[in-house]
Length: 75
Image 1 (spheres, helix red, strand yellow):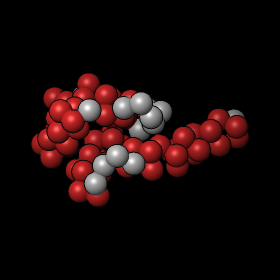
Image 2: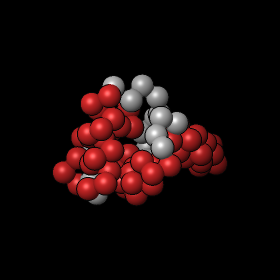
Image 3: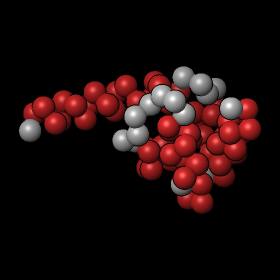
Image 4: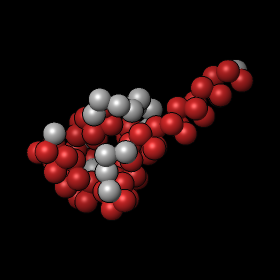
C-alpha cells in the first residue's frame, strides 16, 4: 500500500513541471484546472498531456481550448 501511495506522489510531483515545460505561465494557468480534472494521471512527454487535453476538448474551459488549438497548430 505504501509503495502505491509513494508512486502516486512521485507521478503527481513530476507531471506538473513536465506539463509546464513547453508553455508560458499564462497557458499553464489557463489549462491547469482542466489538466487536474481530466489528465492528472497522464505521463508527461511526447505531447501526451496536450493529446489528453485535446481528447477532452468539449469539456475544457475556453481559455484552455485556445491553448490546445494554438499548440496543435505549432507542433
